[in-house]
Image 1 (cartoon, rainbow, N blue to C red):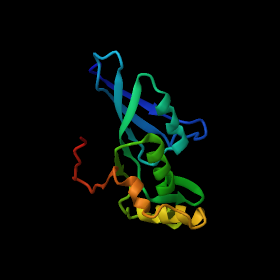
Image 2: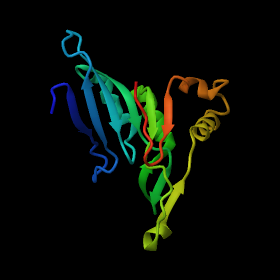
Image 3: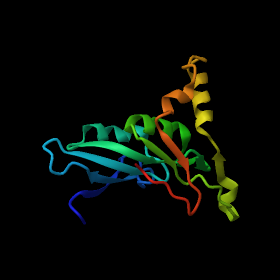
Image 4: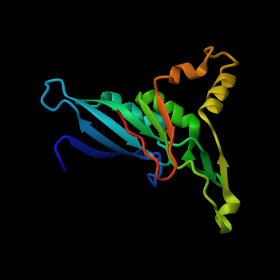
Length: 166
C-alpha cells in the first residue's frame, strides 16, 4: 500500500456484532509539510453511531472528512436496528463536517420468506428529517433549514452511477 494511503475501521463496544461500524480511508494530502493534513472518506453502509465520529476531530495528523457514505432509510428487523437512518446520518454529517454525503443502502430491496414479515423500512429524505428536527425543537428552526446544508454535496447514486469528489 502506498505510504500516503491509510485504511482503518471505526467500531464501538456498544455494538457486539460491529454491524454499525465504518471503514475509514485516509489520504495524506500534505506529506512533505510540517503541518500534515489528511482527508478521509467514511464508509458506513448500515450507519455508525454519530458520536463515534467525534474521534476524527482529535486525530493526529489532522483529518478533514471529504465524504460520508451513510444512508437515509431507517431499517429494522423486528426490533433490531439494521440501518440507522437519516436522523443519525444528519448528526454524523454535522460531526464529521464532510463536504460530500453519499447515500448508501437506500435502494428498495425485495425481501421474501420469513424475514420479509419482520423487516420494517422507514424511507426518509433530508427534508423530512429537517422537518422532524423542527418539530422536536418546538417549531423553532432557522428560516431555511436546507441553508445549513448548501455547501454539502448530497448524492443518491443508483447502481452503476459515479461521483467525482473534488
